[in-house]
Length: 218
Image (cartoon, rainbow, N blue to C red; front, side):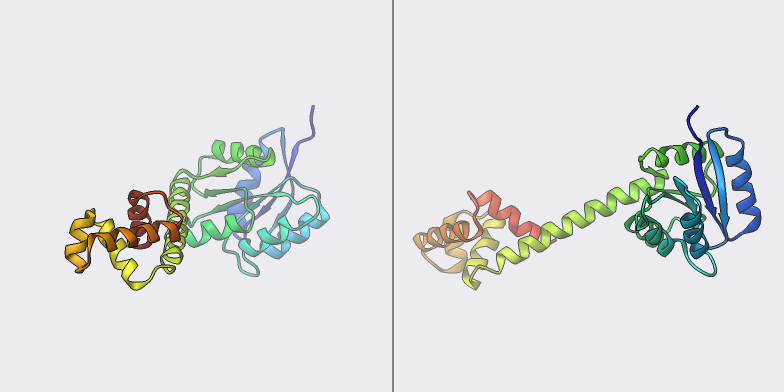
């Protein structure tokens, strides 16, 4: 038989910590090697006892779980950290994940799901509560959109004021003749501006230019 997965339970509430230890101890392939009442104690325990997983609370007097997670992940042979908390606030979720946590579950998680999550993170897999997964996807999409928008804004700064006006009209779907009437210039001049806009922005056609303009306005 393979050696059991060694676990440190970091939780400031004694009753909750005892319950977690009891649940874990029912499994022959899991072993609690230490308990901690706060983040610093968890780090010290990980330095003293070899372990594969630290079950970490977020809010603990004497040292929070977020900073402790970052310290644990910086250790040689760093253990995986599975955050278990009552709070599923975005700040906690993303701070924990950015600190290096491999998973994030709520304390009302079914015991079997908790045990499966411990095994999963020990194997190098991620584990997130369903509500957290959706928000993480949404936040990633928002960040990607923001980055795309910032890139578009930077590119449009290459244009002159007049070229920006022409691009705005192009983005509205106006043809060259309509743009010429709208901006009081000749059609030939509009064509020249459009060509320069595409060249400056390294685009191939008006559709790409319109999309870039749209991204800049998000």
